[in-house]
Image (tube, rainbow, N blue to C red; front, side, top):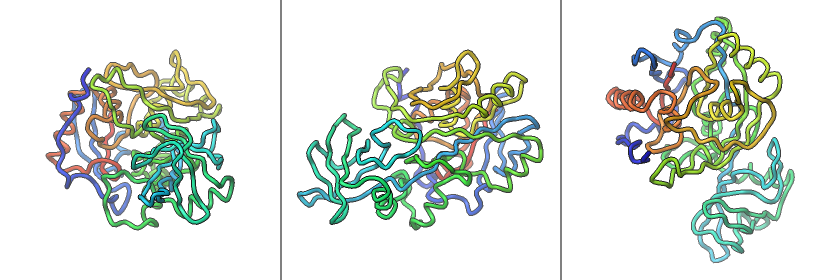
Length: 346
């Protein structure tokens, strides 16, 4: 399967540069798979399509200021994006060694200076990903990163939002577990008021965690989709949540996944139709042809061409149907990507 077949053209003025003033006032496109129907609403009207007993699953990961700027010993500028500690832990530990991606042209042995007292040396090079060893660790490293780091918004967001505004908006309202370098954008549209309204209707909300790293936004660098290997990301589902979700699935309740990260977590923890509990690194790459084991509905944004998130959406909704929906979204001037509008596929 060729990656080029998942390309499409989009005018730059449809790339959302900031969120809607009110999170749930974005547009909502509703796709009914069996009927092949496309309809148009606003996100606050999603209650029309969620029923009593439906279980909405959210990714409660929290974004941290993972982009740091410095300079090389030669004086040239340098930029790194922290991906995860070089230690398999359930939460961030502020160890001195971190996996990163960086630019420009960072090499083993290079030292990067972020301030007079804060620096790091590239110790390992695995191509796109590298390891940096900082001269600080623990709470001191955490304070420095939060002081100097920037919100890691994607490069296509070029708005003049302040760091304070980005910290507020590039985050879900239910973010809890610190560890992501990108926001779980499908969840940006939920407000506390909307969640309470849905709960009163009988919709149940459950949380899982997937710390978003390179796997979610990693470009597909192979011509044939099947040859691509996605980077792993750490995920967790606790036992109580697993027990509830398994029972709900068994009883016929719909499992509505909020976002591609939640979907990869649920599907990655599922075997023979049942979820397991615990934590692990997930490297599940979902593309058309994949047979979904657990989810019944998907809430997602409009994704980049030729991206793994678009491939997952096409796998769930059907490529032809999704591309028809994207064509209609462009015609009706939907807002695309991280701060853009929403889609519900059921």
